Amino acid sequence: MIILIVVFLGLALACISVMRHFFIQLTAIKLLFDCSILLLVSARGLESPDSSAQAVGWILGSIECLAFFIILSCGAKRFNGTSNLYLENLDD
Amino acid sequence: MRGAFGLGFIVFLTNVFVNLILVFNGAPLLGIFCLLQTILVFSVGVIWLIRQDDFSLHFHKTSTLIPLVIFLVGYYLILDNLGIKFYAIKENVEELGNLMLSRYQVALWFGAVLGMLGFVLAGGVMRRSQK
Image (tube, rainbow over all chains, first blue to last red; front, side):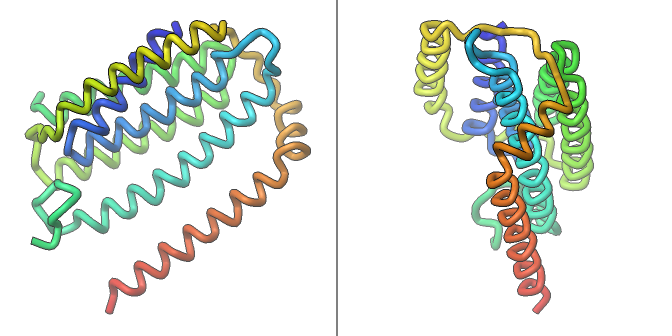
C-alpha cells in the first residue's frame, strides 16, 4: 500500500511540475495534500502514537482548506477576463 | 474527453480513491472532510475550465521528471528501511480533541493568527485592485 501512495504522490508532483494548466495543477495540489495526510495518519512505525498523527492530519487538512480558499480566490481574480492560462505574462 | 479535462478527471478520481482509503481505513471524519474539499475544488476547477474554454495540455520542462523519479525511489527506500508500514487507524474524536487542545494549543493560536493575516492581506489586495 505504501508504494501505491508514493506512486500517487509522484503523479501529483509530476502534474504540478510538468503541466502548465491551472485546473490540472489545482487538482494535483489537492492530491498532494491528501496523499501527505494519508501517509501521516496511516503509515507509521509500531511505537508511534496514533492520536498525534491524526491531530497533525487534521491540522494539515485545515491548513489545506484555508490554502485552497486563497488559491481559488487568487485564481478567479488572476485569470478572470483573460484567455491565457499560463502563470506568467498575464498582462499581455 | 479532451486532454486537460481527462487528465484532471484522472487526478480527481485518484484523489477520491485516496479519500476513500482514509474513510474505510478507520478515519471516516477526516476522510469525509477531505472528500468534501476534493469535490469542492474539482467543481470550482471545472467551472473555471469551462469558462476559459482551453482544454489543450500545456507541457513545461518535462526533464524535471528524472529528478522526481529519483526522489520518489529514494523516498520509498527510506520509508522501507525505517520499517514504516500501513496500519489501520483508530479514530477517537474525544482523545483527539483533548490532545489538540492540550498539546497543540499554541499551534492552533498560531494558525488562527496566520489565517487572520491571510484574510487581512487578501482584503488589502482586493481594495487595491478596485482603484
